[in-house]
Length: 296
Length: 335
Image (cartoon, rainbow over all chains, first blue to last red; front, side, top):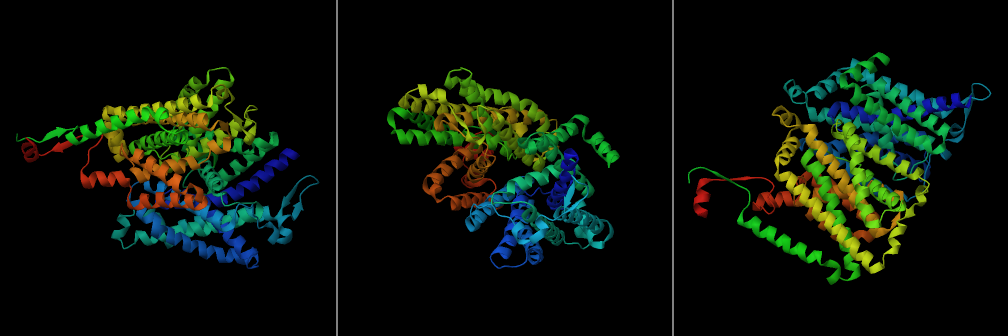
């Protein structure tokens, strides 16, 4: 029973990983950029909400409502000031510039908020601990269920946006070939700016769940980036539902590791990630994709 | 005298290489002529130069941006602790430990080198995190409490300082020489082709994976050696300090500011980093903001760094790893 509970809680943890990973995956899909500041930007969003709730006394839900457009604006600026120029410099420059940005963000947050461990859970009342009992031994947290629902809705919404709408077609066409779309009157730079804004709006929501369900410090960004990245690699770059599956695999692996021994939580997650990489190399990229398609 | 000539060494570069030799000869006498404090600081400078040269060999010449070289830095220190604990004399254990880590890089490279761009970058970071967590499990290390290179206590403080200085100096010179020789040989041409366009390089017959493998293992060994030398001068081993991603931040700063993809650039970058650290290291957080900001600005506006820009503008050729075509008029003029 404890084991079953561990797995169930792992699924909920995985939903958070899917939330934090979908912005990373989306941006990579559109611009072929792995944004190394992704985790730090999620922590920035978390601090933004914490600041609004703690210093201005705003309800965390209102703070989230404010954080989404603010982070979208941050995304637009990020594209305008950093990513656009980086893209012109070749494949390596975006990695270098976003890593530099991550260091700047982490340390500015440290300067502004200090080393204390923060959380939004004191500000959301009962929700931080309220749960529904399924059996005598197993209960699910209401916040966890909300997180899973948010992951499904956001991933589904993103999928709908890309598959069904005109904007989605424009984004996919631009991802395919940013120069050719110029011939049919699409401004690739505007599409990129919009995509970055969408990715950062998603990051704001992920930041909210990070802040509500767990604790964070100015230097939490690196770990969030790693979890997001592992999720995307396990689930497969470019596949949105794969992202949810990848998050769940990672979360369950971590919780099963913790079931064995508390210091196996992170280790077992990293080991599963590396096992997936080795399998990809060993089976070859093509048959790995086929295998994943069959499982999905 | 009507055909263009291809040349490598110029009078300018011969003179500069001679000056470098003279400078190195003075540094080699280090502990005998410098004050103890200066000797210690120079030891860290040598470690920085080695780290920057290794990171540049990866990113500047093979197109591999690693955010996880601290894995090898930490493992090098850890291996030295383990070997000296097992009874190996302390200075040989520094080199043997790094060599073991270099061996470990062989199978790791088989997996990691198949990843591209950002996947490789963060994949290496995951590897560093995993290495950190696994080292923490060792009862000798005792988690984040850490341990010390106890065996080095047997050496008197003065000779310890001098021996560590010479080890670091020797390691730096050796690693720079290896990179210099590699770049001037056939591998250098392959690597520069890979850096400029991997697919195009493969299409003209460059063995991309084999070339990357050499650099990956060299960089692992070099960073591990830097780690074990850092341990010899710091003595204490706290995993958190050695496996910190901060080391990557330092490496990126040194390489980007000095000159990514140039031989001399990372050395210049390491010297600049050393100066910045000496002047502003006490500023703490703002110092780190400055380092990150500088890396960001250089990546965006001066991607080949100070040296890359100076080299082009002043047509400097100081330590030549490439060739230059000299047009006939110039050759005639020189004659």
